Every structure is written in C-alpha cells, then in structure tokens.
Image (cartoon, rainbow over all chains, first blue to last red; front, top):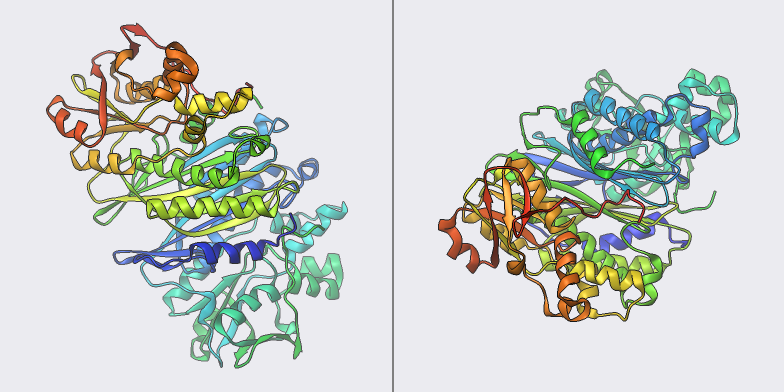
Length: 316
Length: 316
C-alpha cells in the first residue's frame, strides 16, 4: 500500500469528524480533547512497530534496548498530551509479540513502560498482550488539564515562536543506528529515550499560551502544521535553533542543522506566544527561535522551507 | 515466545497495579474504571491481528471481509464497556497495514469502523495509521456510566446467572472458516460481526446488578473468571444454555453445546443477580442458566468444568 500516513488521517477525519456535545476537539491535532465537568481530558494513541520505528537488530548494539522502547512508547504519548498542555494520567498498553520475541524482551519492554510511567506519574490501568506477525507496541494515553489546552491552530501574527531543549539529536541517534556508526550514548538515547516535556507544556498552558505542538516529524514539518492550522506564516532564524554540542561534534554544524530542521522524533515542544510573555516563557524552559506573521508557509533565514518529515509509509 | 496471554496480564498487574486516587478499578477486569466527578469512565483496549484473530485468505470467502473486521473491532471493545455497565462513547483506532494490504482493504476497514461507531453512538476522535510486518487493528474505547458499574468479582451465593442471546455461534462461524466448510452467513457473521450488548448491560446496571462479564473466551472460561474473582462456585444447566437453531442444524446438538461451553468471541453478557430481580432481568433480555453458590469452580450439570478458552499465545 502506498497511501501516505497523512492522507489516511485526512480520510479518517472526513469519516469520523462528526459533532458530539462533549468533544472539544476531534481528529487533527496532537490529541483529542473531551470536556468532563471542569476538566479537559486529552486522548491520544501512538504506536511503535518493528521495521518502521525500530529494527530488531539494534538490540545487539544498545544495552536495554527493549526497556528503552517501553520508555519511548510512554514518553511519545505523554508528549502528545504535553503539547496540548495536559498532565498525562492514565494509560493502556497493547503489546504484540511474534514467534521471534523472547520472554526477556517482553520483560524488558514492560520494565521500561513501568519506569517511564512512574517517572511521569502515569497509572497504567490496562492492556492487551497478543501475538502477531510483526512486533508492535501501542499506547493509549489520557491526559488532563483544568487550565484549558493548547492547539496547533492557536498562533497569531506578531507572536514569538519558542522551543524547549535541543533539536536534531534524535535524527542523529537514528543515523548512528541506521549507518552502523560508533554508538554515541547521548544521541542514541535522545532517539530511543525521548523525554516528554510535561512540565514545560503545563507551564505554558498556565501562562495562557494558546498554541503548541511537539517535534515529532521534524521542526520545519511541525511548524508547517502550526502555520497551516493557524493560517499564518512562521519565520525562524537558523542560528537561534538550539543544537546540542554532541550533535555538532559528531555530525558537524551543517548536518546538525539539517537534522534539526528536517529530522523528527525529538519530542521537544514548540509554542507561539505574545511578546509580553517572553520573560516568563523563557524562565520555564523555552528559547525564542522565530516569529509569527501574516501570510503562509515556513521560512528559515527568510527562505521558504518545504515540509519534509518522517512518513512511515514512505519506503526509505 | 510461549508465555500465555493470561500470565502476561498477571505480570502487568503486578507491575502497574498501583494506587491512584481517581482509579476505581485497574488491570484485571473487562475494563479499567476511573472516577470523573459524578461519572464513571471505563477504559479498555482490544486488538485484532492477522494470524491470531483472522486469516487474510478468508477475504476470498466472505464479502466485505475488512468492513466486518472494522465492525468487529468496535463491537469487541464496546462489549468490554457494556459488561462493566457503561455506554461506549469515544474511541481511537490504530491501524497497522503491511506491504500486502490494499487501499481497498483499508477503505473497507474504516467503513466498517464508521458503521459500527455510528450504530453504537461512539465518536471516533483519533487514531494512528502505521506500517508494519503484520496487519493489526487496535482500538481504545472510553465508556461512561453515571449509575455505577459491574465487576467480575460482584457475584454472591444464592444469586442467579443470566446470559443474553445465544452462545457457541461464533465458534461455529470460526470452524466454518478454519475448515473451509460451506459458508453459513448467520454463523460466520456471528463470528465476524458480533454485536456488543450495550442496551442489556446498561439495563442491568440500572437495575442494580453488581456482577457481569462478557463471553470473550468461552462461557465456562468466563464463568471461571466470575467464580474466581467473586470466590464462589457457579452451577449451570446445559439444557438452559441458549443455542441458535442454525448452530444446532449445522453442527448437531452435541457439538453445538461444546462450542457454547468452550468456544469464545460470542460477546454475549453474563450477569449474576438476586432472585428478586428475575422478572426484570428477563424482560431486558437475559435468560437464566444457573445459580451461584458457596464454594469454588464452575459446574455444568453438576460436573466440574475446567476453564478452557481461546488463548492467542497457544499454537493451534
């Protein structure tokens, strides 16, 4: 099947985007949002599959590989909740193993899930363990917020663009694994063990920030989702994009920047916010990298940057 | 991996069954239950995988096969909610396709999901479409009830055992597909298109019924889950077990009864309830098949019946 992931999501959107009194937000953002009394609930799911998200042979090169997959699964889903401004609270896990899966791998995977859930304060309240032809780990996460939520479509002209942490590291880690380069623990862990930016997302929503998403598919790609949803243009300055020393050291400045712009799976948060909040937003961990203006598209150093990101349906 | 599904669930239970103020019920029943103000929310997930739950070659023999898989996915999850007494409300779908999956199959699958969701009043608010080595369809369902909920552990000595519909049909339908017998639409649809007993589950919880589960793994097996959780014995009379005319016609009385007792995936509801509710419970669609008493185990016509059900990890 050649259908792109994003086309399929669009199709689902067309099929199911019907009105329901309690649904604040349906398909099309990082998570759906329900109202439950005073509370907003975020619902999201995201899966990792062997072949698309990881290769089983990496196990030989990375200690505790399945434990890291378990941690990644929880954090990737917590990141979707965080980018809506929610606190991840409850989770269910579907783990599909194959004839080739070992009991040790299953144990390690669940250990990683447990560790990440404890770190984030998430209660894993259920799940299903099944057997299939390919390994697949799916997670369903419920998040909550009583202070409202942030959306991709909330950006307005004149606002600043902020980002947490550093970007490009995960793509660097992936490159190391794909190309069989010498393992760099920091970069490989940034790819295999991302950290959901829950504190930063909660901080932003409490400051009244209205627009956010996470860097799951690449900075430029995810900026495009904001620009399109908000019907604005976004300009970023490449020299302000935060790069880790390790990424620059291993790959050089130019490739590091390319990874930062077009790599994915960093799970850092991007927000847009009015200039008046700049000091407060910086104090909770965001760096300013650009600005929102009227128009359309994403520009890096004044030049249009086309949306390119990971698409799991594209053959590599 | 030879680990049984149920052992793994027990392990997960040990790992994650920690206390959380809002969690009424965690791993170990048909769904988890959260409290949200006046409302109880049920969370469950259940997946269908090629190889364990269906074979791709059945597509040649069953019209609209992927549409039926989509309907089944929604109903199987709605059944978990129904057996807790909830109304299925919100859902997310993870669909994993392979290189062999066709676009037509994907469209059919989503059409089935849409139809079933509309029939049940479920809003599909999100999902993820990915590519992997085996087809897998996962569903997360959120149900709700403001009238409390039912559990496997709620049965008490002296109560009656009630069941909806007929049992064994799904196993009959599976047998037809596995053995390449002439397709019987009724039985094959009972396997591929089960109907979640939402009305009956809601009716029971509103009558104050405290104990329920659904027939997902076989009548005897699921009665054992009630007997064990409730620390009681359950006696059923085989002649009272409701069998469809079609099942008896195609497979004969003896095999029909065997399918009813040990087959699975009927997704009928089992409840236990005080004798005083008998008339009311019968009026909402349950038939009395037995009685709860002190002790342990499940007895059919006075003889102990061992728990045997579908276990997706066992080689067939």
